[in-house]
Image (cartoon, rainbow, N blue to C red):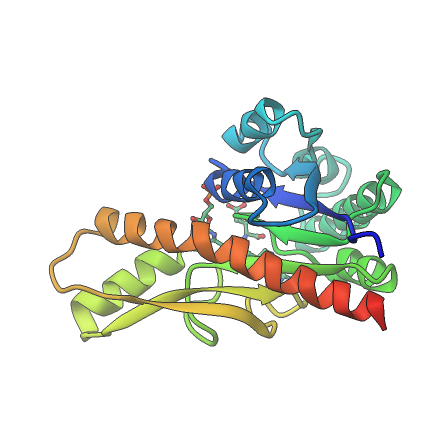
Length: 221
Ligand SMILES: Nc1nc2c(c(=O)[nH]1)N[C@@H](CN(C=O)c1ccc(C(=O)N[C@@H](CCC(=O)O)C(=O)O)cc1)CN2
Ligand SMILES: NCC(=O)N[C@@H]1O[C@H](COP(=O)([O-])[O-])[C@@H](O)[C@H]1O
């Protein structure tokens, strides 16, 4: 039976070093029969877009600012803009050919709402996210710095990295893979970030591979 081919859409916001880990894993076969068919950034100047172009992967910029300009600058207006933005993001992904088998948030710094999650789930597409913390700890942005401070000031002994399923509650979806990272007294934040990023680059491949294996097994039933 022909091996399944898996298509990934990768969402980014910045440097794209985790995207690069996925690009390299597809090329090396560490992610077998897998290709990244679309990279979407919510930041126009994200270097990860250049990484995509260098790998001949289509990339696009999905700009929240243009949505906010169409709505009043009130909490209700901003919520309406985010819902519209998220619904259009889902439409863009669902209209892409080929459609992704899996969406990977690789440093995607935007909280998605059910306007995105529901149509993607209805299409049977999973979403996974890289988060530099362990399940139930330091949800949200700035997790590494918060863990570093807890290590320096409260004696926390370890933090970690996880790949988890994306649900409406931020960083609360089921963990797919996790890896602990030791916190070292008097270590600089920069040095901890470097160690954590190194763990991320391996774990995002491991978590993506495990998720795709599950998708393949479900297909085979
Ligand atoms: N509904 C969900 N959305 C997202 C999840 C999730 O689990 N559920 N994971 C995040 C990634 N993430 C941490 O891993 C994260 C990213 C960004 C933020 C955040 O506070 N973003 C702000 C804007 C920050 C900025 O633009 O610089 C916001 O969206 O208002 C929290 C957590 C991906 N999304
Ligand atoms: N809440 C998610 C989060 O904080 N993700 C962080 O974004 C970075 C993206 O780096 P990259 O653009 O080089 O892959 C990652 O290093 C990760 O720690």
